[in-house]
Image (cartoon, rainbow, N blue to C red; front, side, top):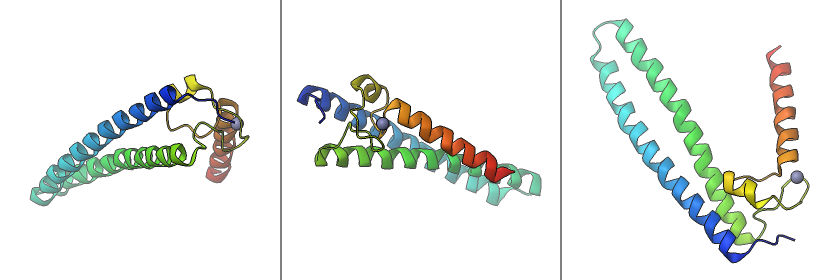
Length: 130
Ligand SMILES: [Zn+2]
């Protein structure tokens, strides 16, 4: 099974905590910025300004959506640490290299499986758009 030491796990847990703090601060900033844009939109006298504000809100939502997705991934990683299957590839059940987890503590797949997964998703995407 997974041969990660307590120290390695603690280190990864710390990385997750740090990342979570950054994301939450980022989300708060985005939330504040969005309220500014809403203000601009409601005060804008002509449609040109308000469509600019709407566009900015959409971009913010996309960024916020990515942050939210990563926060969920961090929470999932913590649960996997608790249940003991953290660091195990969900696809092939092999051990995800510690270096890979250091670079991406929320990783749920080993590199080959992740590449396969992304290739399959890219295929699906291009086929769907045709
Ligand atoms: Zn794998």
